[in-house]
Length: 114
Length: 117
Figure (cartoon, rainbow over the protein chains, first blue to last red):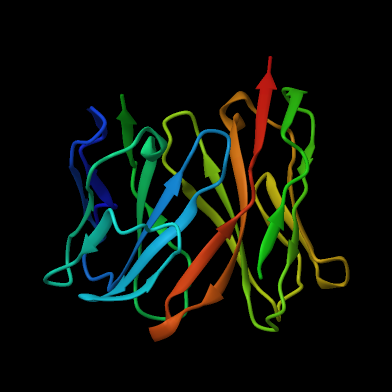
């Protein structure tokens, strides 16, 4: 059973460019989450999918951010017109059905906006 | 609103010492879950333990033990006989239930543990 994978692991971009990250959850995990972590802080919730439906979005997720999970498997997180404040680690987590509640995290994508 | 406080920013110990990481939480929900995660230098968050609000039984797993006290809203984590490999950032987290049965984790700011020889 493979864990959560994320691609790319690192992304450097110039301000104003668009970036897209991918997350592949643990197979058969129907719930998928995106978090953002800045230096010295704990992860902060961004959004949540159950299957293909996006059921919750944080106020942190501005209009420049969009997330999709088109077939209920992998998910993408796109940031348009990146700003330096978007520099952070973007973490994806998944959770299976049932009452376990624990989320399993991927290695993250570190974004640096120059 | 939910809040998790980890007052200890950084702790340094010598190998084989015991160390306790503190976690205090705030929530108005009567049903909630608490977690500890470990984040080693590689960056990936590793799940350690989950506790629900109705289970105050303390748990021991090898060198790890957890003390959950609802009366003080605390969920402390102790590592016995610490090892260099325990060096990492440890996060305490609280969850609430979202639409559709999902859950959002609210993390503390983490405690950096350094175990030296």
